Structure formats: structure tokens, C-alpha cells
Amino acid sequence: MKTIRPFTFKQFIVKQDQCALKVNTDAVLLGALAETVQPEDILDIGAGTGVISLMLAQRYPYSNLSSVEIEYKAFLQAKDNFENSPWSDRMQVFHIPFQEYVNSLNGSKKYDLIVSNPPYYHNHLKSLTLEKNIALHSDLLTFEELSVGIAELLSPQGKFYAILPPVQMKRLEICLSKQGLYPHEIVEVKDRPATKPIRLITSFAFGASTSPYHVKMNIKDDNGNYAETYASLLQDFLIIF
Image (cartoon, rainbow, N blue to C red; front, side):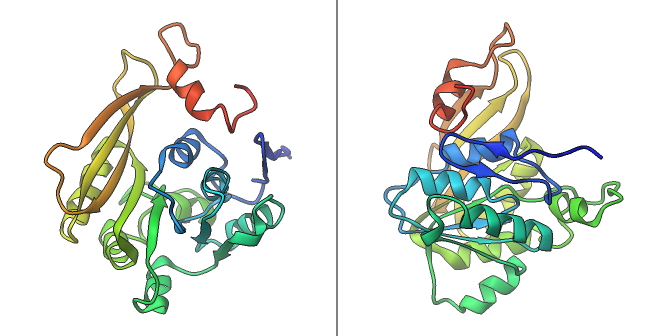
């Protein structure tokens, strides 16, 4: 049986052997790019290993970070990763569906920054493992439900960041617009300059923006080396930079 090693960052370690989805490029990009001015409270929807929250904890030393995770093994792993991090005193994870978490707060809590790398497969062939189905498929949290919950929990000046393939991001954008949330910043992620976008990282906020800030980012250059912008973005986190 293959041993799945922890992923070692410069300031923390992420155990990942109990999670269906391991540390990946989507997660580290979202953790590095999601931002707002001095957020007091941050929420991560679908913690997985907890890597996004850990990166945000490193970036925002005065923030309190909450996460929700529905899959039990992932919840336990995120909890363990948080407890063994340098920021354990301001990190917590809840084993609860996001919809129930929203209802439990009953309007009593608002977040300055909300992030999610949401499941987006819908009516696709499923995996043989329940854990991977929960992580990848939107059956248990639709974009409509996600959008309603975000509108309920986001502070008036807050930001919500998501990373998705372009087609799925458009679906989410439509759902969020029905809740009064609109794109303000869009990062178009390509594997290389000549390839098509593989992901969009979009920030949403209340109130429409006449011209969202739009930038492009390449993971690698034409020679197959990591692009300078990508390396610079992750140099505080990844030991390879």
C-alpha cells in the first residue's frame, strides 16, 4: 500500500493521508490569492486538509479562522493539522454541512473573508469511494445553496473567493448574482501561456462592479519552468521556491 506523505510548507506541515483530495495547485493558489484588508474573521467552506486556512492563518496573523467540513475523515485530519500548526489558538473546524452551519448562526455572525474550493461535478460518473464523491460532487452542496449561505454570512464590505474551471465559475456567478454578489476581481489561470485557462479565481462582493479587475497568471513558462509570477506568489509557502 502506497504511503501518502505529509506536505511540508515553509511554516507548517499538512498531513493528507485521510483526505480524498490531497494538497493541490487549486488550493495553494486560492490560499495565496484570497485577500481583503485586515480581516478579523475568515471562513473556509469545505476545509479538506485545511491547507487553505493554514495559508491564510500565516498571511493574516490577527485573524480568527473557522472552517466547515462535512466528510468525517477530512474533518479529523484538518483538526489535527490545525492543532499542530503555529496558529492553533485561532483556528477551528466544524464537522457540519454548510447549510446547517449557516442556520445555526441565525444571523449572529459575519465574516470579512470567505473562501471555497467547492465541489462542482454535477451528474457526472462517480468514484467508488464515498469520500471522493463528497469532495468532488455538488450533490450535498449546490451552487444555489452555497450562494444563499455566503450572502447570509458575508459582512457588508467582505469578499468571497472561489476557484473553479471557467464553465462552472459562470454557473456560480449566476447564482451569486441572484443574492446581490458580483465579480470584482478575476484571475485567469493557465498552465502555460499558449494554453486555454484551466481555472478562474474570482472574488465576489456586494454591489456590481462596472469593470472587474482582470489579470492572467501562468503556472509555467513556454520552457516548462515555473513562471516568475507563480513562484513569487508562493515563495513564502513552498520550499521549492
